[in-house]
Amino acid sequence: MMEWEDPTEASAARNQEKGAEEAMFLQVYHRWVQPVYRYTLACLRNQADAEDVTSQTFLAVLKAGRPYLNSPKFQALLFRIARNKVIDLVRSQKRRAFVPLEEWILPENQTPEWTLEESLILRKAIAGLPEDDQELLRLRYIAGLEHQTIAELLGRSNAAVRKAIYRLIQRLKVEVGVQDAQ
Image 1: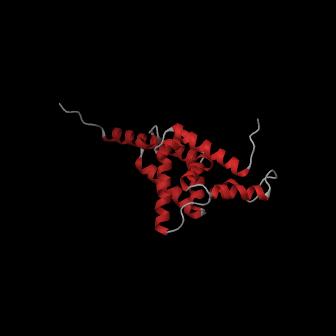
Image 2: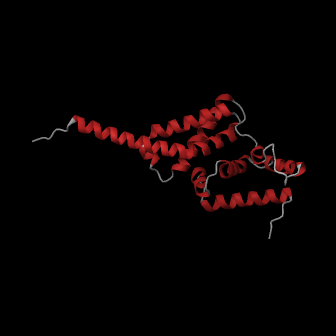
């Protein structure tokens, strides 16, 4: 004898599962919306475009659903979507993809420790870095991603990312003339 499923019970179970998935998405959204927005704004240098790309990124996450949200590599996947959305927008608008990183590291209202000359030297040093190196610094210091997440996003090892960032910082210190406090 075949058992029939009660349609009201099945509907209630689906609604409960949908509610749990929505709650999970909201939790992820609130945790990651600002880092994703800062990253897209650093890349696009246009508030409206950054907001649009951030929204598109989370819409893609929402469409992907629970398997995506439960992924152990969620952060890397999230920023890969954001990065691809930035690239898509830039290609469609045929404009430069990234804002010079030095403009984000040194805001216009600089702290008194920085002289104008030192700021200009650092800006020039960062502007002289290859785009891949600037992207590493954007992901680490603007988006605030951990080394492991950057490694997953870029398809590199954690050690390679750590070493590359360390070397970039050391190179910038030398170019700017900053001495390490011993």
